Length: 237
Image: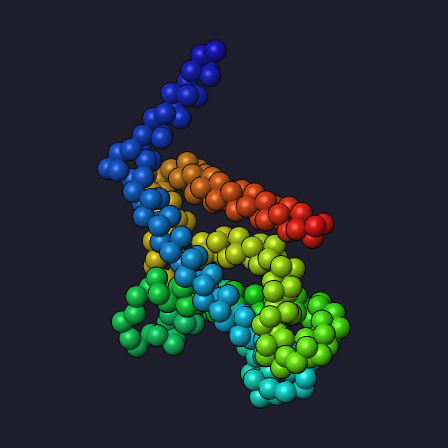
């Protein structure tokens, strides 16, 4: 019984030292805000970039057109998917924008968005290519050109197929932003590390960071499962 009381007493003391004293909890709050900003910006950029690349590649696969665009798209996919995310972040910040004064959060959004776009592109392309060719033929038989058929018939079905995979990619992106601290951004992980450097207590701030990430991922995972069930119900109608 005394050991339990001692444990909770030590826990409460360490909690106060790590989070209450000098308002150190603000490091986590400010870091969480930056993490969410980077994630949201990267999601938007990655989706737009991935959509364009997917359309270019699928158009080339289906019609043989856009050869130049497909060539550059393949280079982009090979380079981005073949190199680590952290290295890409460092190259963009220290090499590409090394000679200019650039906002670090913007730089992180750009790096993570470009990286995510490569994976989003393949997810969307797989959805487009999974649609039966008869759908394209049906659209053309109705007098629709290729562009109208893609927009009105193919893409809506493709997005419905790949939405769960896209949502999971965005969950992965949220966790990948934990390396943003390498360019001195105070993200959630960096906030925990700052607390650790001040209190010399590692486990409590780092466990707090892990717990916050876990709560966000669990929430997003539940939303993905809800989305999957909703799509499954629509398919049975």
